[in-house]
Length: 97
Image (cartoon, rainbow, N blue to C red):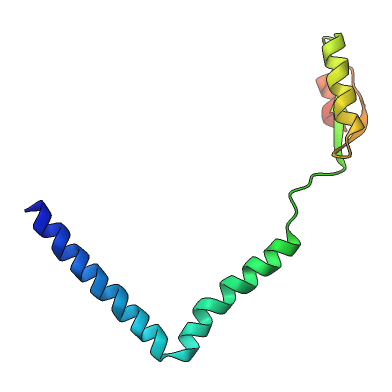
């Protein structure tokens, strides 16, 4: 029964897909409206979007004051991704900035 279902479903699906492609081929406006917008969107978004992060303000609340935490802060502030906003002594002071 399961095999019969898959055979019938595959045949119906194939027929439906072929019908839709024939419809698209016969209607020029439909073909253009299905192809042109995704191409334009991919092109525009490819130029407009950038994965680089830069000039993010970084506020530091270093409770441990260990060499590792100071090294981490130094590495973060040396990159162009982060801009040091300042050192803070409490969470409340950090929240007001």
